[in-house]
Amino acid sequence: MIENQIKFTEDSTVKLSKRSDIFGVENKDWSRIKDLIEELSVKSSRWENLAWFFSATTIFLFISYCSVEDTNKFRLGFLWAGAFSLILTFFLFVMDNSLSKNFQKEKKRILKEMEKMEVQQERDTQEGL
Image (cartoon, rainbow, N blue to C red; front, side, top):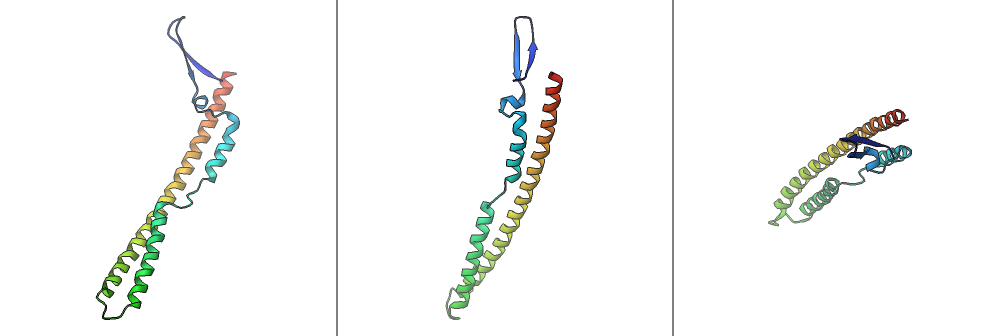
């Protein structure tokens, strides 16, 4: 384990572990960790789940509107609720798409940062030798 040392006097020395040692990440683990991060994906988010729920609700409301008689006092309510549900469904799918893109950007940013950390660790190792 590579350590940095800070000496205040001959009797007092503080040993600081490098960042990689604190988290238990060794040089040989970088490729495995990168592979794990690259494989991360948002399988389904709560926004997508809500969007699918409201899309099913929209279909139900429009079918209800079409299946009730013209004299039914709830018929117009089914139409308005279906329209509102359709708008909400669209909003939720847009929100899910936006968050998914942000997740992909963040994943790329993390991988770039890991490459910088790996290069720095290699430099530190070479300087320590």
